[in-house]
Length: 212
Image 1 (tube, rainbow, N blue to C red):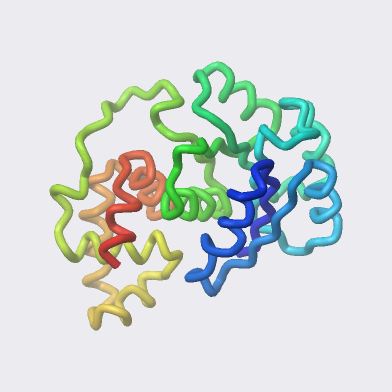
Image 2: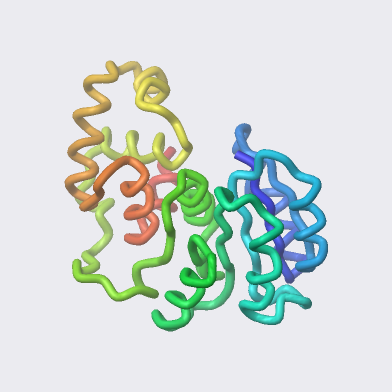
C-alpha cells in the first residue's frame, strides 16, 4: 500500500513518516508539507493507494485545494481529507466534491492506519459521530468479543487474508471464516472491509491492535 500524505504540522508529519508505518512492511509513505508539494509528488508517484490531505495545509484554501488536486490524481485513487471534527453537512459537501473520506485529528495511529486501509480497499470512511446514522452507537464491542474474534480483527486491521490469519494462529481457514462471521455479526458489518470500518467507528481498533 502506497500512501501520499499532505500534512501541515511539520512535527506531526515527521512523526507519522518516522513511526506510523515502521511496523507496516507492506506500506510506503510519502509526505509533503504543502498542497503544491503534494500535487508534485502525486505527479511523480505511481500506484498510489490513497491520498491524505490536511485541510490546514498552508496553501489548501479549504475545499478549493481538493478541487485543485482531484484532477491531478487518477480517479480510482481515493482522497481522504484530514482535520478537526466537522458538522455532518460539511462532511457531506466534502464527499460530493470528490473526497472519499474524512480523518479527524482525534484518530489514533492504529485507527488512522485501519481507516487508510478501508479507503484503499475502495470504501468510504467517515467517523460515525460525524454522520447521521440510524443504528445506535453501543459500548465498546471489545468487551464481548472472544479471544479468537480479537485475533481475527487484529488480522483484518493488519490487512491479512483469511489464510494468513489461519497460519499465524495455527488454525484452519474454515475456523477463521467461522470466527469472522461471528465478528461481523457483533460489529454489524456487511463484509470484512466494513468490519474494519466498524471497529474504527466503535473505538476498538486501537484496543485490539494493542492486544496483538
